[in-house]
Image 1 (cartoon, rainbow, N blue to C red):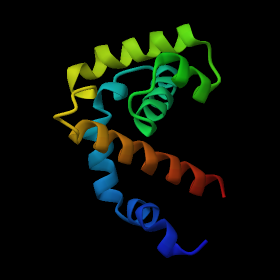
Image 2 (image 1 turned 180 degrees about the vertical axis):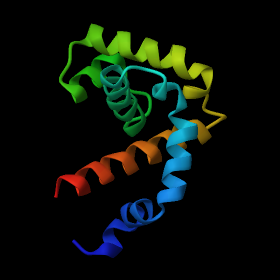
Image 3 (image 1 turned 120 degrees about the vertical axis):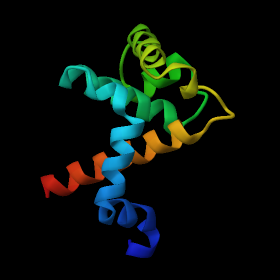
Length: 113
């Protein structure tokens, strides 16, 4: 695989300032939570955003968790982010959150190398 195939990843990794701004803004509700809970909800948010419109059982399958656990996490995300998370006329939060989560995953993978 060449860099041209991963342009978004290259851009996200090289735009540290933008990545931090995205994370600070889009993921702000998660920053107030204990680290373990924030990580679980971030993982759930990522699964939801990667396949928009997934049902709780589909999110559960993607995360290998019980459907009721997925429902609880999705409810918590709704409480934290409000209606903007599911409003199709306001995609900025979803796009920003998805990019912030992608940036975080890329940086964590790079740190493990």
